[in-house]
Image (cartoon, rainbow, N blue to C red; front, side, top):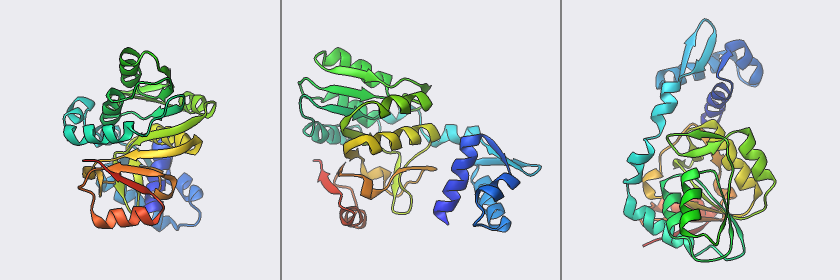
Length: 255
């Protein structure tokens, strides 16, 4: 049920506005009553607005999903720094790496080792930081539409650029993780960009502080079996650790 409801919301957010008849056709395995129940669920959650047989995105809901970048930058700063230091040790010279957007990834940018490697990123602030601090690195920026809340560029053009580049290691960030939803994010295009990166990367390293556990955003961009390494703090609970390890995820705890 959770996966279906997430798919219904994702379809609405992808299209902006859809009719209930269109949803019935999009999910033929579900009864109209089930779809209407899903719509009621998302309407009560504030994710959509309904009127005259149609459902449309509630932009205010999306806007509120993520705190402003400046607010998040100071949250758990010490933990993010520890995760970044641990992640930096996995970067080899003469390799191609992707560095995701977000405050944890900015911390990683500050701790990049000296070396001759290529960095691809969707975050202009991270691209600028690396260019000025590590001039020996070659930095590629995906481009696309800039999200002021995450300082990430995404969109169809971004995904096409990623498809043309070989990625040895992808360092990813997540807005939430739950056993049912996997690794999630609040914006559709950013979800698609992350999915494209993960499909392209030879190795995927997820950086996640324990405050993200149990938090679920609308869009799933990865499941545990798609992740090679998780770098987290000691606050990760035993159940989550066991679940991820059972899917083949190597867990590195920073301290």
